Length: 490
Image (cartoon, rainbow, N blue to C red; front, side, top):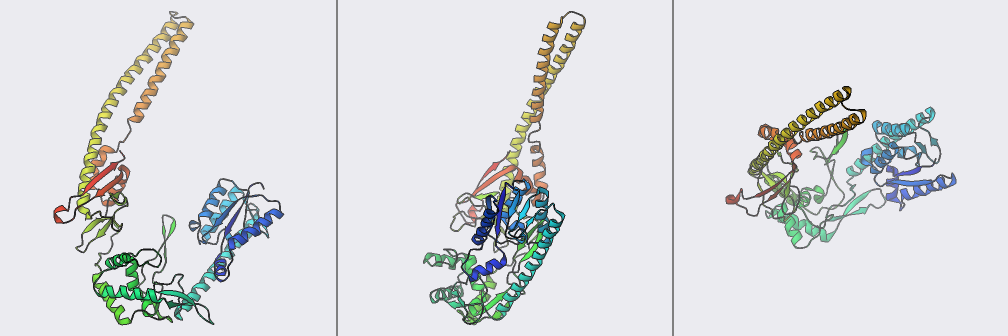
């Protein structure tokens, strides 16, 4: 085996062990496998080291690279600690891994056994190993989830990062963690709640915190979402919530997509940590937040913005979004803080854009028609020339058969005419190929106004490279005073 690589990946057990002990699982496994390779005179030329411990292939970038190279038959064998490291996901992922190794005839080497996927017994042993690892994974995961739920019911903190105002504290003489108040941060938490009681919204509170130089927990600056999440978090009144954002899995175009929507049926448990905010203040803040919330219309599945992803802010170069205002209208909005690019009604932007694009398309149509007419004339001339040459060639054959031309003259004339014919045919083919350019341009302007937003976006995405939006002045008198630069792909 000349071409051998190593694949390293942590298991869930390894991750739990690393939390308790200061060890590096991947480094330890790499050392064991390299020693095994050295003893068995195996030359390892590449190491795939998976930093994440994803459940599926799609969540493991190094596994995706490995499978791609296996498919290209770049490896004779892959060296791993155990076959379970290759695939511990569902049966589909296991089948994909097994198929890649089998069809490429790539062996799997572990310190205890070498698997040949084309050997019937090794194949069964390999598949059985994957099946058992999946069962073990489900058992471990179920045990972990039950343990986490039990800890929550006991009022312990199970998160990895403590909320602002607290730090994680290991419980004495028992498993688990709780939260301990950080006095300096707790004062900021109280300050945030008081600002809300005084009528300030999340955005203004975030601006004030940034202005006076207070740093947030994770990011160095505060955002409206960070403030809003803090104001709604019951951890500050001595509670722990469980399953507030439950992970949902859906299949989209054959791929598993994860979403974490808000869950109304979450558990709210009395915690063992001290509260920073009293329940009376917290409830007042919740009423204020509920009263400020914009009553949203149930989201339609139909696309609302036919220029989604195409409009770019002329000041910060970020993509702009559609955002509802308090009057139920929709604005074209830049999400960058302090960008300075003023919003406009999306309907006004759409109206102006459609006029610009249709005008540009009509201009392209005129150019298209002009080119088509010129090409038709060129093709007509070439076809006449081709007919003339073909008739001349027939006469050459007649002269040769009538002995007017001897063989030498005949071949000279024949070769020259045939060469000219080939040149004319090449020019004709070139013109006919060019004749098919942008054949959709005349059609787009006819259909563009009669399509729904989803179809419009498909059409626009084909012909628009980008749209740059800039607006300097606000107010009712300047509602349409925005500039649009449209870059087409035509």
